[in-house]
Image 1: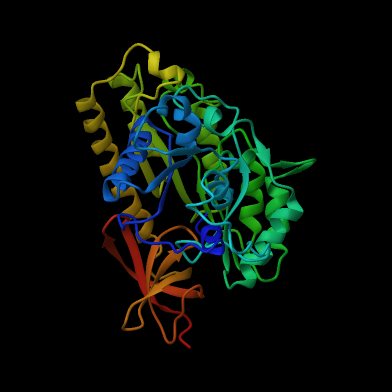
Image 2: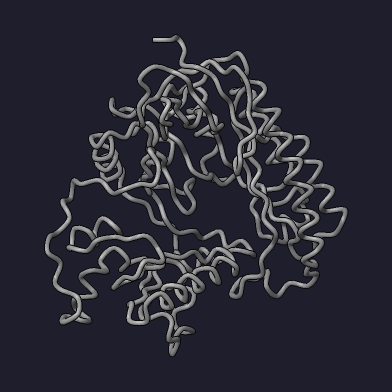
Length: 409
């Protein structure tokens, strides 16, 4: 979106700076996220009253009609139109916003906030979990043709990116005719300029078994899986509308770890879902303790208008949600430290994201551990082998590893 604005003759400025147009590309996955999007819109309007404030993306889809008469948001633009905002602004206000000066070169890559290129290959979901608004905001599953994805990967690698992340609203539902996610990964893997491939979140009951088999033999696919659990209690999973039980989850994890003993394993957990009593929470705690998670993302259940869970009985008190959240976060931090300690003395692959003034590199291992690297002439986007010498506590990311480039140049 920023690239298209700049191609149309606009300059991008930091949020909070007086501007002509403020685009709030918001999130609606929870009620809190939706509220944060509206709060950002109000901030933009307060900065300069004549700023044209646009709410784009999922909140525009979910809030739409309810914003009529709202003096904060001047325009809502959903998923389909959000990449053509400069043209739309000229059409609506030709005297205030000029016609786009240039068009974007079809082969120019988008900008990213990291040194890894995100390639969106799929959108939409039809799983209709009780707590989730995504099917309403994003619609039915739809996938990009494999040749189109490969063309975009070639664009970003020609711009210098060495790692690509394949993303989607429900990535495991990728389909291009008879081709599935594992076929897509093989296609990306075949491109010589691609050095590392990472997958975003993958739902169980989609493509996980084929992906695990491929990952265990691949030299490019990072050995990290993020598989949402959401609850370790079968009754709560059923109430959530999830498509698996805890036995299935255990089986998939066991299969993955048997094939990849040093696999990084992340998950999402919702605490305080309606009906979650002490016994159900204890079941979740036990399952988390039993499984080799290295990344634990824990969220308190947030009531979301328009979802089935919003009207379920047994809503849990906010104070109890916080207690349960803190308990699981503490367990997660311990498990991450234990996971990091397993790599001491071992070589790991690290993508360099940034370089300090003294030449020290910072990045991420294939297993998704933050890493500090000492080496000669390190550069951003470079992928180096590092021998892990120890672990460090990191603000915001828990625990990371440190070491030096190996073998030393």
